[in-house]
Image 1 (cartoon, rainbow, N blue to C red):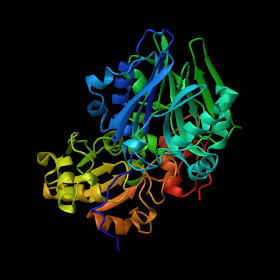
Image 2 (image 1 turned 180 degrees about the vertical axis):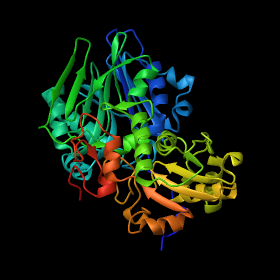
Image 3 (image 1 turned 180 degrees about the horizontal axis):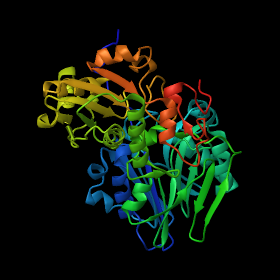
Image 4 (image 1 turned 90 degrees about the horizontal axis):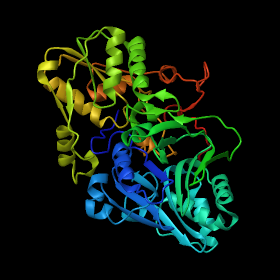
Length: 469
């Protein structure tokens, strides 16, 4: 029997987003560019936002809880400036959602100052924190990102490059880092490349960003993605690059392509929009059903619905409208208000679905809250049949690398058959893309024929690229 999870948050929650800019001209101000870059990465985190910038060898940071446009009023933006800086948007995956855990973390010490923005999760953060505390290092937050700041600070007397190398070799897990010092901007990516990070160029300077769409948004040009295990140091004279780890298996998070990334981004050579179109085509090939209309759950389900329609000949329609101004449903204080928030977030175009057999394409099913509600409102609007097709395999295992997944017991696909799920959701049929089909949709130079090659599939298969306890 599938438990009722309507009072729980649905969907996997985004990783964080980072955006850094370095200008060679010390009189140019990076803060306006960082503000617009963060707006482009808002989908990666909506809990808090921060900007740190270095001006006359001093790093100043401003941060707050809320969306980028809410935190950074014109008055607050006017308080910071600098020729180099880093911005961050956060969704908490380690540590509580509070201003103490909002990034950046800034450390000022005898040799200078640093600020760190981090996307990912350290799997050994508790162990490292305890070792640092035993050595007399104090912490002001529960965030694993502060562990990174304190490690770099502790090793800084060896020089920036050695401090970075020693720190990165000590930490385990997933991370894309942007580190700001008094005279440099540093980017680093974990040895498996789990979290994305790219290098861009803009007139008179350089950019580090979680996604290529953010580089595009400020008029920059994407140069390339950082390789797994690579560190890039940008200063006024040059861009240095070195690899800090032995070559390991690339394992980019597959959910970046399924759901997290914006469709106009390209990550590690894979066009996100194209991958979603291909996933829909493969779904159509693997699990076609007789229908009059295919619709996608906005926003990430729409490209897959286009691909499904192309593969099966099923007409595509809009069907469902999503309000972009409704907050996450789980912040409502009681069950009745949660259900009302879900109702406001999605609504059906009745004339499009009435008396039709509808295929509903979604990116994933985590708890089933949204899917159950959508089936209900589609049938209430007059749909004769509702068939759910999902362009990711069943999510049966938690993620330990920077995505906020529920406990395993709360994942609706864990321990329940597809038939049981279908009955619980009230759908007429239900099918997921196969793991092989997902890999085919992500076809790129990094994929090895017949093997998972360059992607982390841990939340689907339980096989992780990094050992977890």
